[in-house]
Image 1 (cartoon, rainbow, N blue to C red):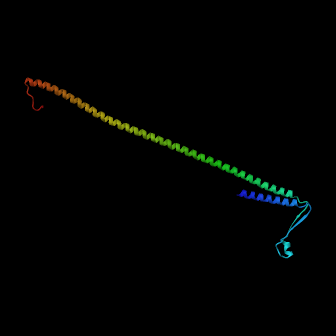
Image 2 (image 1 turned 90 degrees about the horizontal axis):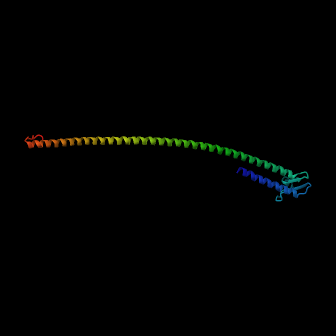
Image 3 (image 1 turned 180 degrees about the horizontal axis):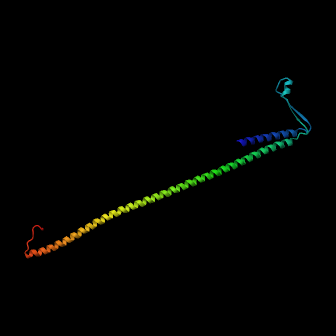
Length: 190
């Protein structure tokens, strides 16, 4: 908006200077006097004198030099605007670069923080799973030890039962032979 205003002002000035130059070239090279008066007014002649404008063009007047000076001034203003825009562009570029580096630093910091948290979480999960495995193994060992103890006890009982059975059979066979030979059996044994 600001440079656009200056460009409009520039073109307006150039157009005015162009029209002024055309009007000067249409006049002769000798001194000319142009009067403009208000034709619409019905006022007396002495009041019209205040409204009159005169443009006197001398032979020494150089319209090209005036126009050149104006154009040079306009070009200087445009050059200053261009330099200011370039400086603003450099400032914007520096700002963008600094913001980019700052955002990259923040991203890298966040990335490293997340990696550390993930590593910590993985270690915690590993530790937790190891503890769970140890707990499950100890529970399995306890259950197995109990089963082994029960089986050993059952085996001992079976062995004792077998020994008793053998003893009983032995006794029965011995006592059976004794009965055959005339030894009475006690009623308490059976």
